[in-house]
Amino acid sequence: MFDFDKLIITFDNGLRTLLARAHSARPHPDAGVAGGELGADESALAAALMRVNHTGEICAQALYQGQALTARNPEARAALEQAAAEETDHLAWTAQRVDELGGRLSLLNPLWYAGSFALGAAAGLLGDKWSLGFLAETERQVEGHLAGHLDRLPPQDQKSRAVLEQMKDDEARHARAAIEHGAAELPAPVKLAMKCGSRVMTRSSFWI
Image (cartoon, rainbow, N blue to C red; front, side):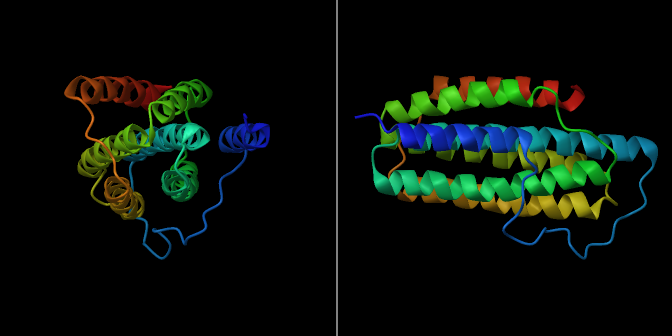
């Protein structure tokens, strides 16, 4: 029997993700880190990079919420929900940093949320090992994406760097947890499709 209560909670989580200001359960990684002097172009670049990362966290929330909705195994669902909770911290950290840099969040976030949620729910319906495999591969790709952004940040923007480094550590841990819970290795064409979709998201949210 379909659990309508779970569906309502998931819908509420979606509205909160898109419309409410996220709050971090952990201290912000850049608390106490001195902010370097940034020029106008450097601030704009850093803000755009952090906007992309915020949109990535919107997508991660949607993916994990969709997967948790359709997960069959309680342990798999718990792993997905734990990852989603930590991604909420990431949402708060990136949103605050975008504000501090004088930027704005992506106007395309609702679109990316809807698409990612549908993808996550579909992955969950395929079975828990594939859903966890999708989580593990997502986190691997995000970890690589964050490494690229760390290279592109202005060297003196140590506050943004502290945020991204903690996020990168968290993503690696999420991938390991998914593998420990029985994640299947995704086929190469699926990994390639995920990379292509991620590239479209990052390029569009950099500007819009």
